[in-house]
Length: 246
Ligand SMILES: C[S@@+](CC[C@H](N)C(=O)[O-])C[C@H]1O[C@@H](n2cnc3c(N)ncnc32)[C@H](O)[C@@H]1O
Image 1 (cartoon, rainbow, N blue to C red):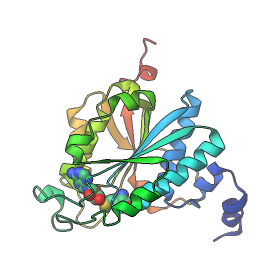
Image 2: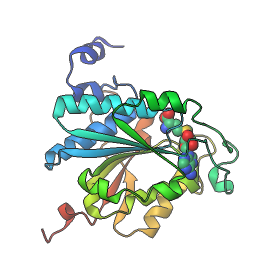
Image 3: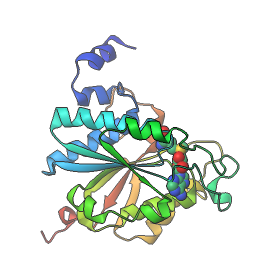
Image 4: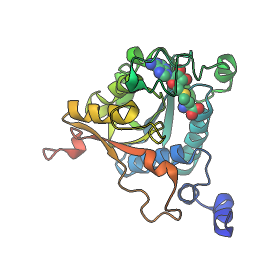
């Protein structure tokens, strides 16, 4: 670790710590901090950050920690919401779910009781995402969605998760930071998995689009970091702040 990174890790601001990738789950930290700064810029004080696919909770617990750092530094409240069936992956539907890699029961939440005890400020919505992802519109109207991680491996599950991008425009910031976990392995391609789900979602929705995050790497101190390619942005093109009739 360079002396500068070490210094930033202990004495830097939250933004500096994020830019130097010193925070655990750097991709989540990047998306959540970007979301919080954007919320602050447009006068929103309470936002939601979602993780689809919780498994044993490593990601969710990291999100809780990052949410606390954000609240301390910027005064923005970040509500962390996880979605999982608690039983691991369902049966793959067809080749689009990458059955050459994953199968039923992978990533089961074997520590459910312990995880529920450890979870402090976040919530886990249990059930198949095909039933749960389109719920809670009322909650998100008051606490707009600002960050979404999609880590459910399959095309079929990802398509269900993306129902959460179809609520009323008030349920979002105009642009939602997104992380797609399962797009960078040798058999990944645009005709399967999360990459296909992104293309299909974009083709089916005129005013909601998912695009790569075009701010990365920008002038960040580390230019070639793998997770930069996993960062996307959900564009809410029918958001009031994107309307010319305000
Ligand atoms: C790779 S794991 C998630 C790992 C977690 N994000 C982390 O970083 O620690 C994938 C999770 O997606 C969940 N999942 C996949 N398809 C699902 C579905 N249709 N409904 C609910 N959960 C699903 C599985 O139960 C599994 O726990």
